[in-house]
Image (tube, rainbow, N blue to C red):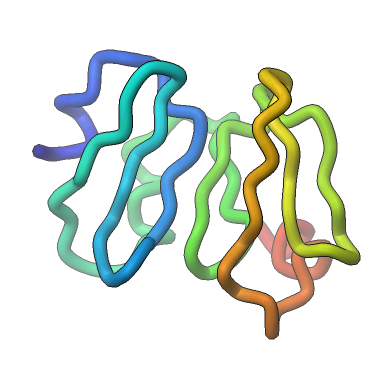
Length: 96
């Protein structure tokens, strides 16, 4: 499945165990994509931001970023821990 084939609003996209997963409110989709994750930003609306090398998030759906704990909380209450613990979420987010 390509990212354009997902008809639901994507909350965030992550790399998990070497697979690209698009998370929506109701379902998770495995996405086929060649190249770097940040290249997906070219086909997504401007409200999608890269918050670590392994995650893109719809910034409009984020309630808060935890820059110390390297995580973010969606407005739905779901807390997403980033795998990239060695990266500083704040610096990475501000870069993009």
